[in-house]
Image 1 (cartoon, one colour):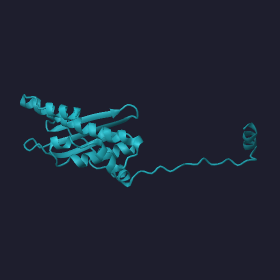
Image 2 (tube, one colour):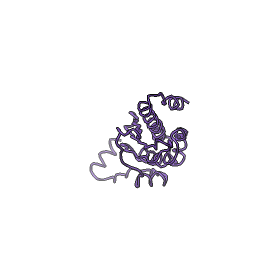
Image 3 (cartoon, one colour):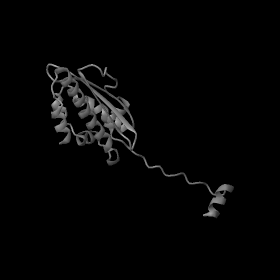
Image 4 (spheres, one colour):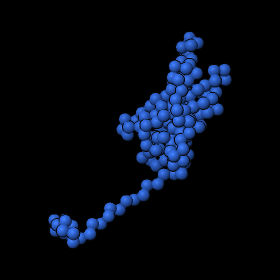
Length: 166
């Protein structure tokens, strides 16, 4: 080992370039990372807006997902996100905002991280990104229902807590 190191220092042995194995992401991840949909923010004090802020301390990803709900129909009319994290976290946020638009608040609670991960073909090491997206959706719906309950003076947040525990 010492002999090889001294030869390298003297230039007698050419250093071998380290072999870099390519890491490929699925085209859906690359598309949503390069062209994220619905990036932005709504006014969080708006009673029709629900905000979900979640993070993964282990990797440093932080995701804020917001939904805007039509009070009369309960339909999510718009959604946006801001995410600080890896490409998989950004792609998961982007997919989540697309999937929640046009659906009822109760209906989006059935969106599972496994569906997002499958759509993006996330590797096992990146599954936490899709879990963050699912948690952000649930947190946004819960926030909206809590705001609505305060305005109406009722407790509408219970169905979300039951769904989150399921």
